[in-house]
Length: 189
Image (cartoon, rainbow, N blue to C red; front, top):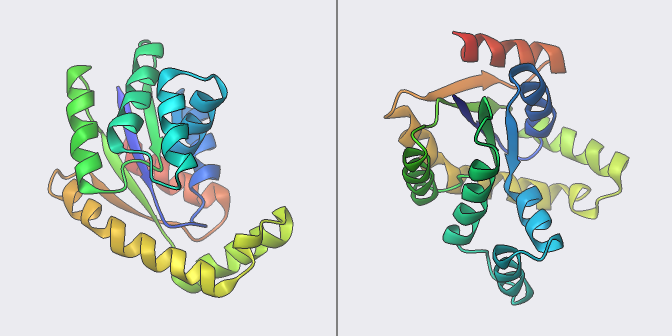
């Protein structure tokens, strides 16, 4: 089973590459944001629990998100593998994910980190803001703050996966196809 943690700062191209990886390797794409929205829309027990936290302006606890991921693992037992997008974001979440996958007799195969310099990220996100109309993607100081927060919070994950020899840096600059080719070389490596 091929289980990939797709990693990278806002604007690195994770969403685009996740779609291409999903199609090329017949994987299930698990975006925590999409999972949360789907569980809430379907009014599942986990969805209602998540909604209660969100209504109070609080983060959804890790155990609720892990529960949603477990639900997806159970629903996709015949899958070739999974792309984890947006989770884990902390070492504690990575450890919880490892424990969950272990109960399903699988593990993370590779952590692929799309690396793009900050100036390029800001330019991409500003362009995305112009194209999509998202206000939070138009303000450069807000964008820089998101990137700084991402770097601070997620850098320990790189160490976590590097210690397991699963961390791979992918140059995220270039055409969609060039970046995808780099991803495939590491996966097929």
